[in-house]
Each structure stands twice: as C-alpha cells, then as structure tokens.
Amino acid sequence: MLARSLPVLALAAGCTSASPCGPSQAIVTRVIDGDTVELASGAKIRYLLVNTPEITNGHDDCYGANAAQFNSDLVLGKTVELRYDVQCTDRFDRTLAYVSIDGREVNTLLVERGYGCVLHIPPDGDDRADELLAVQAEARAASRGLWGVCHPAPC
Image 1 (cartoon, rainbow, N blue to C red):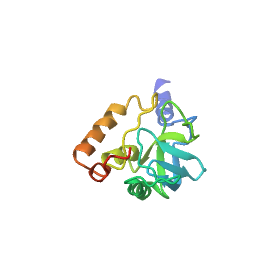
Image 2 (image 1 turned 180 degrees about the horizontal axis):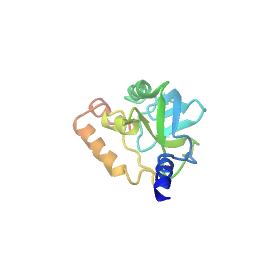
Image 3 (image 1 turned 120 degrees about the horizontal axis):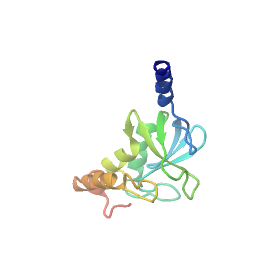
Image 4 (image 1 turned 60 degrees about the horizontal axis):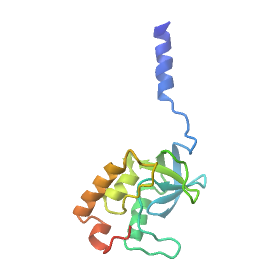
C-alpha cells in the first residue's frame, strides 16, 4: 500500500496551488516604468524591494528611461514567473511581486545593474532586504548605472 501511494504523494508535492495574490505565470503586455508592468489580465505588477527612477506623471528622473528600457528588454511580451510575499497589493492597488524571466529575478537584476535602488516596505521583503542591500552596495561601489551618472541618486 505504501509503495502505491508514494507516486501519488510525489505528484501532489510537485503541484502548486495558485496564490491568493495572483497567477504564478503571466504575459507582460506593457512596461509602465522600471519597476512596474501590466499583465495580459490588466493587473499592474509593482516589483518588490526595488525602486527605479520615475518617468510617469510628468517625471523624467535621471536614469528613469534607462531603467524602463532595461525592464522592457527583459520582460515585454514574455511569460514571467511571479512570486508574492506577505501583502498582495500596495496603496495604489498594484499587485506586489518578485518577477523572474528565464530563471533570473528582474527585481535583483535592476538593483545589481544600477537601474534602481532597494525599497523595503515591511513586512514584504523582510527576509531578503539585507541580500538586496548588499547587491546595491556592490553596484554603488562599482558606479554601475545610475550610481555612475546621477548626482544625487534619484532614488
């Protein structure tokens, strides 16, 4: 009996239920800026733990267009993986998520390459803030992206 139930248990362990926050995969149909995208469903996704320079609502912050272009090059028209944390949405009703493409997390890439800064709003990101702050310190020390051209840094 135990031998027969093991494959069933293994199969069940491989299945994941959908998060109450949203889908685990989706197609990005629009890039709003460096840290926000829109999915085919119309849902707006705000990347957790990262803040890029603003280019919306009349803003044209230093390196904002660069961040938006980098984000677009990574995710526009592609299926992304979405992971959620504690809170599903922010005060602007955007869904909060870690976004990955081809096994690379976009949130971390934005900070690592100097397209954005760490933005930690607890409780989301409590378990990863130090990790991304270390990545940011490396980018800043190497004058990557906005750290090398924006004085002062816009985020």
